[in-house]
Length: 351
Ligand code: NAP
Ligand code: F7E
Image (cartoon, rainbow, N blue to C red; front, side, top):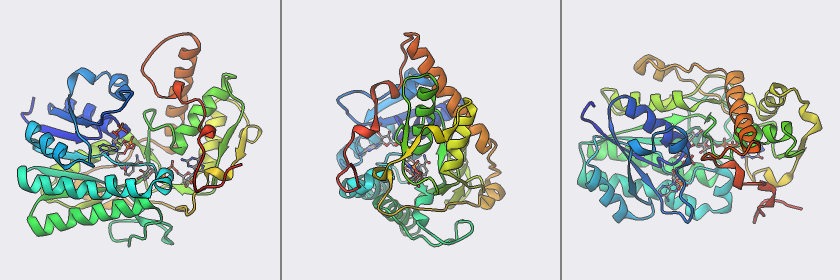
């Protein structure tokens, strides 16, 4: 133990689970917040085998009093705010809820920190989505933000509030402007995991087609376990600041599709269909980060390549579906999410 206490909001999400695992290896006592749901959602903590090692506190960013109770109960030295409505597509469907959770929720949290634990170090999960549909060859800490979705607008509000609380109240409040990062624990609606889950099912004969939207968008994709280490390094730095975390590479969605199908020996063109429903009213077409500052000041560098990332995800989903076919039971998200096609969209086009 290092006698330090960390509070991770959104511990049930991809990054929350990996960050909790990382902090436990560093000797932290780890508290994590979860939302009360009709069906409990602890599969990632179980998957990493750390469910019994973390302390769970009920907290919703919509509810200031639950935030206050969480801070009082945990008395954290470090707070990692990962909780958000994080799906860009859904933010077009529910812009108000996305703003209240992902934007205003952070203001509620900062106010509570200012009043209850002002000495705590605070990390905010900012995002490359804040750059929007920009025209720059790469984006770094100096690039202007032009958000292109309700999600990005909410995140930019939160990002601005962190800077205001740092300057105005002297909080040790930092942000990581993280570009897309993926893993076998990635939420099933996000494009990489949607692809690897479907490719595994197609390979095993459970499904035949994969419907996608915009294949031309480009993303800077890294490996999530490496990105949570960057979050920790940001809070160990001697000064609160903003840091871009990225790979400095960019690839189209189609390249990811090709890599995933090739991994299992199939031709993607025989299985992929375009469905307008999965195109967004406004998309971010090009993202490529520059992590020079994080490298220079934090010593952080990405390690897993684009191809390795796709292979790790494909192999994990193939193993899960193979186990499922063999009647092996384990904690997992995909088996009871049969088909995203079932979900009707209010604003996007559908058949
Ligand atoms: P994720 O898997 O969607 O996890 C989001 C977490 O937030 C979940 O634990 C979720 O709980 C929780 N949450 C949602 N609404 C909440 C509310 N009203 N109150 C409290 N908690 C709530 O997201 P992720 O990929 O791990 O990303 C972590 C953070 O980094 C997010 O803030 C995301 O916006 C940001 N980010 C992600 C990326 C990326 O590429 N992954 C890049 C940049 C920034 P449930 O399990 O109950 O839904
Ligand atoms: O979309 C295109 C889609 O949903 C990537 C979040 O973690 O990273 C994530 O946001 C691209 C977009 O991630 C489908 O139009 C095509 O251009 O995987 P995504 P995202 O929107 O980049 C950032 C950094 C965050 O902060 C967010 O929290 O893929 N795309 N066809 C599709 N996307 C989805 N989801 N589904 C499709 O069928």
